[in-house]
Length: 218
Image (cartoon, rainbow, N blue to C red):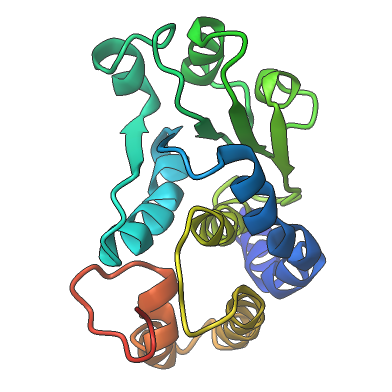
């Protein structure tokens, strides 16, 4: 049954986080090296766009407004003409093959730095990316369990690479995410307990409640 597959997808997230730990920890240095402190454009659609709200909010929260986040469709139709934009471009797309993503890649300058974040190893995004941040969610039911949470953790790594500073290390946050995901998987029938967990400071940090006051995070 699809519901059983969904539960398996949810329950294997701690294993997914642990399996991607080294990749996530390498993201800050990779991003910093590619971006070189230049303003950047981040783009995606649907849940990919939502995942990118985390690094944008963390940077904005500390007064850094050098990153711009734009829906890929809006970027194409209403943004700066892509052949004139030289800012590094971070594209998050689970498949790497959405119509908007492919169209965007066809319009950017050949020498523009494109940082691709995708599960599609053979996708148009993976092939065009100058810097590829790959992940593998292996979802059974449908996309948006591990692929979404992994995208958020990759976004957290990107925030560190773009200049975000926290009293928590990236490694600490990844470990906390794995522990929390494991607890949630064990409490699938305890909605009240899950609600308490999601209101804890760590989750307010990871899941971007912009008005929350979070101790220890600057």
